[in-house]
Image (cartoon, one colour):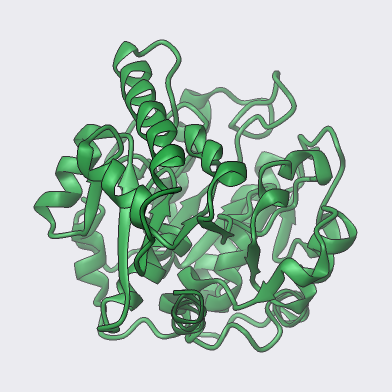
Length: 383
């Protein structure tokens, strides 16, 4: 859960979790741990969600998601998820007895257990970044016991650019990408209903920019356009080329995109499962968003906005890791969309040598649909 500093409920929930964390530090000295594993992140999605779902196949594993967000806790409870609210006595019991904790963001007040308990900490992170990180950006994760990454290539990046010790890094693949490699029997109509989109055979184009990052003046819309102008142009393109647009802003950005007959907002807070959204996507439009590295595995056309990067510290992976058609202005944007839709309608394959090169570099042999299972095997080793 992201803490809204203006929301008094969030402060209360954080305070209760902090109280539990402090008590757990004390009690763990006297109570033996069991084989339970805690999952902690903003939402039970991405790598955490994939590992949790895979763990249900193992009788030997007991994974429980911990959340500060009380309404979200109630929602997951109704779905039959093994979940505990962080402000409850059950949360205290869980973190006192757990053997390990797996996270994909920060820890909030659970950071107290890093230095003052035997709880093992594992990081699985939440995206392959363009953004330039350095050692200072991972001060908490440097204190973890293990860091699980997408490939040996990413392990090299973590060691050389982010300052991690190599012995802490383990290539498991990105668990959340398994569904992109092996989607199973997921129908297009089912996915459209899941995202509250009227069922249609029109091509689906996803617009997924990153947020302002380190540039406070950065716009979420390209070519100097404001939201109403940009959405009006998208609506016109949708009519002309019989397609629909989905708008997915970064979770840190405003979610105010309006909807029309041909444009649908699919914000992350309402629709947290990004991978299933990508399965529905025929064409991706991006700028510097890490979502494009997941989309790599679908071998579908992408269009990138040739706009300045909003990163104060430069790059982790630079512009040479972007693929697809580059567009610099509105005219190019509309032309490339038209050509991409026509190519798909004609049933022609999306051939992109740059995409294949990047996919091989970033994922190596780990994008095989078995990353969740490898992660669960690692959990078994730990517990």
